[in-house]
Image (tube, rainbow, N blue to C red):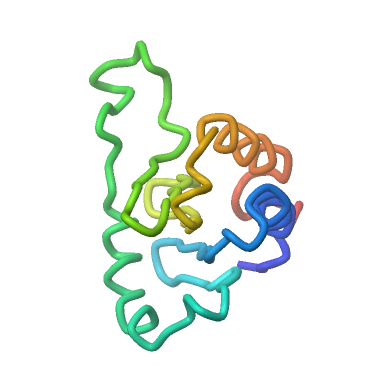
Amino acid sequence: MPANRYQPLLQLVHNRAGDAFRGSIQYDADEWTVLYLRDDVATEHLKDSMDAIVDRARTAEPVVPDAEYDRLGGTQATVELHDRAALLHFYEAPTAGILVSLDRDVAKGLGQFVSSCNAVLDERGEPGGSNG
């Protein structure tokens, strides 16, 4: 998967989060690719943990699936807030997506931020399309 396909999203995240942008990876059913990683985050411990992190992301399910309760609409992204980071998980397909990590203090106005990211993802086309 060409990393440049995700440049509009990475640029949006960097423009909005600045130095608080910790990193991003893209994954599919078979592999994962680092799209961006801030120097202080790029540790051996993270590299050693990445396969397990991506495996969990591949099997993650929304708390409220559309098939069970459709009044919320489809899941656009999930967010995990940790002590020092916020993790956004954008779903592209059942076993494909993008993880974005931000410093915790960026979580203000997160709903608006997620909407902007999804707009960029929608504009660049479907996975495997000719926009990448």
